[in-house]
Image (cartoon, rainbow, N blue to C red; front, top):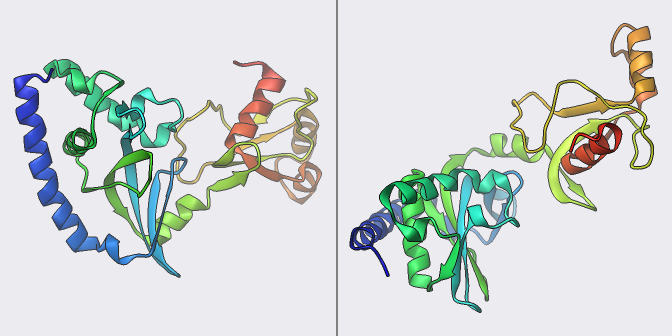
Length: 251
């Protein structure tokens, strides 16, 4: 049963969202694009028509299943990547402070109308500029758009990600060509790393084996000779940490 104050708050947020969405669509005309694509790894939502495109950062508030008639918050969904759900935890924290159970229960029976209310609350609490719900038959995904990203910046973000046969689309990492998934041959990093860490714009995950480190020290750093010996290759972030686990057993 809804808390009376929650019911009033949810309706207020939904009314606010209607005005917010009108302004958002008027400003960016997202309905004028033919295609859409979102990526949980880099947190970008892209609308495009041929070579013309527009990009936004987004959060994934949650999903509504038409089959089970349930809402599931993104922070309670292990299949949703951290980049697009970490800030949604602020909604849960607000729910605890206000004693609004709908904001603290990870999954519960619901309907599509309420899913829009929950998305509206998320938009208000995370200062969203609009919302988007991609077309889908069974599982509806509700996104809160955070900010516009110019195409140059968006491309720079996308360039930091690679397709991986094992882990789909993840951040890129650079390792020497000697590292593999069988042998413990050392793991020398350019800086200490951990999974899902935030990187500075100019940083990448970088690692090389013990033999590469010997050559690097002999050459007094990275130069043509040490780089040629390392023969750097690009892998995804998850592959990087799988190799790190093999060599260091850090998990």
